[in-house]
Length: 269
Image 1 (cartoon, rainbow, N blue to C red):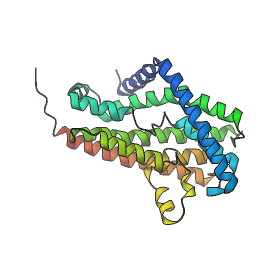
Image 2 (tube, rainbow, N blue to C red):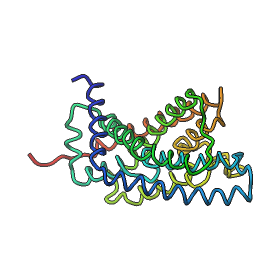
Image 3 (spheres, rainbow, N blue to C red):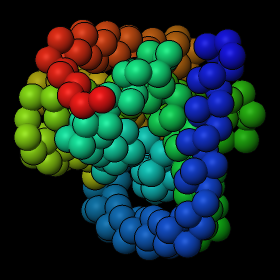
Image 4 (cartoon, rainbow, N blue to C red):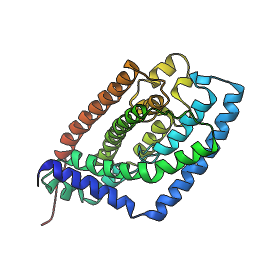
């Protein structure tokens, strides 16, 4: 089997694997929708006191909330996916089976995670955004080109998210319990992606710094593309920003993987 066909098959397996958990998906849709309503009412109260906060009007702010709920599971803003599974396989020694396969470890897990993310985007993304659009006045674009650019930005966000969580997963090669690293990554992803508040709300040097961190590519950039706050060269710069961070973190992950491989000792027959 050609390598490209192999990784497509792995991605398809990842999609089908998560598609089997229908009750868990329904529970996730319910949770995302309820959490979306809570955040939407908080944002409504906040924007009624501070109109145009962060450069968004109220409809744009509410759209930001529901886009965040739509991407929450697929971009894994609260962690999960490859992060926990790779750590467990390293602790149990099952990672030796992964290394024995005629496939690159990082690309294998990337394909698997993209399959997971694809299902989560359809399973837990479409419904919450649709409910939000019915319940609130959102600033969703009518131009299909904007939606296409948004999907490209989401695809890059998935790669940035995977690259960060793959690094967290690899930390289990050095740490007996990497739960603390995973918790720290969840906090950083939640805050610096814009999940709690758009990053444009933060003023001064702090605001400038957080908008240049890799987590900004996981939600802030895709949301701004959909809200048409990035147009023309602004869209291109946003996509290049995501692509640059994806490549940098993937390369760091590949380096960490090569270092970790020199530590692996497989015992037994």
